[in-house]
Length: 135
Image (tube, rainbow, N blue to C red; front, side, top):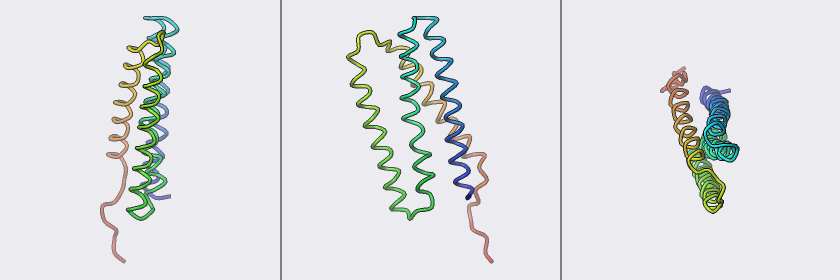
């Protein structure tokens, strides 16, 4: 396994753990503040954050050993796919009367920011050489 693959796998696992924790804490706070409907909205917000965060390292894991044009296609397709899913989800949720938008937004934004922090921290700690040593 390459150093890049280890980095992408670690990012996927850490993002999953962090988003799981944010889902639990966000749902608990939302339930305490605004009731069960807000807790459901917080869980949906965590799911949307996961849809925004996890496809990118998965696409990088799949494509990092492919030629550059193939990798670019994989990453672009994953980005386009996740954006379409998120837009459709937001369009469907905007018309739901009992949906607690503040709990949803707070959890989704917290999850996305936390996943960006995990991505940056994982990349900074990865031991990936800049050059290939000669024979």
